[in-house]
Each structure stands twice: as C-alpha cells, then as structure tokens.
Image 1: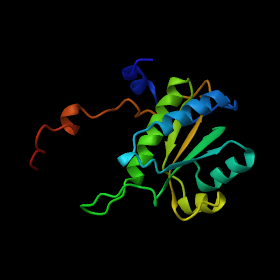
Image 2: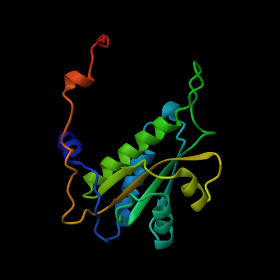
Image 3: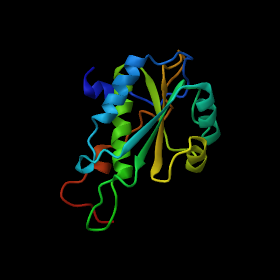
Image 4: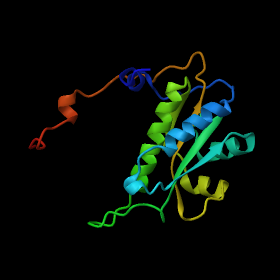
Length: 175
C-alpha cells in the first residue's frame, strides 16, 4: 500500500473480532519495531507480547482501553539503556518508544490489522501485574487485532488542522 494512503487510512480501532493474530504477522510487526530508529541506535525498547486470557485480564485491570483486542503489546524502554542528551540530561526513552510504537502500528495496518495506541493506562498496575523491573518504563500499549465489521473511525478522526496552523518556516509567529 502507498504510504500516503496507509497513513491516511489508519485509525484507532475500538472494536475487534475475536480472531487471533497469526504468528507470522506478529513476527513482521515485531520486526518493524526492531528496525525502528532509536537515538544513537541504543535500542532501549522492550516489548511484552500479551495474548493469553490471564495476561489480557491483567491489561483490563490497567486500562479500560483494550476494546476486546486479542493482542496487546506493552512497549517499554530500559531507562539504563537510553541515550542521554549531554546538554540537559534528557534521555531518549519516550521518543524511542514512540518511534517503535508508530512503526509497529503502521506495519499492523499494512497487514490488514487494526490497532489503537493506548496511553490511558495505570503504569503502576501494569508494572505490578507483569512484574516489570524498575529499569523498564511502560510507555505505551498497542492493542491490536482484526477490526470488527462495524468498527469505524471516531467522528473527529478526519479533522486535521491546516498546515498553516502547525508548520512554520524559520520562525514561529508572534502572539
């Protein structure tokens, strides 16, 4: 699929079929996450794949936003493995995890799967439920599967600011 079409077509799926994701498709999605660029190629991402009922029940305790998806990826970063910007000490973990999540989300769409990037989750609940060590920071959940026949984009999905509101050349406008 053409990238312009892919990026415009993709939406947050909030209703899934109860059909498992094939292992070969999951492998391609995970490979897209592995291939994602990270700061200084540190690759601090750690991805927990959740498919069993017990694990999905743990996800449901951490967020109301699983939407019945049969597969959830918990995208974490290892805060001890992140690149650190010398000017201010900021680490790359959140950005790296976001790039990884985006690539996996788009790969899923290209394979005919739907997904929703979930930030609305309790990281303490997820950390405890999945026994995440202190060095791993859960950054996002990517719920995915085959969209239900009546799944549809949210009403505001196609609303986009004009480029003039979000893109500036050389300097920001003055207030």
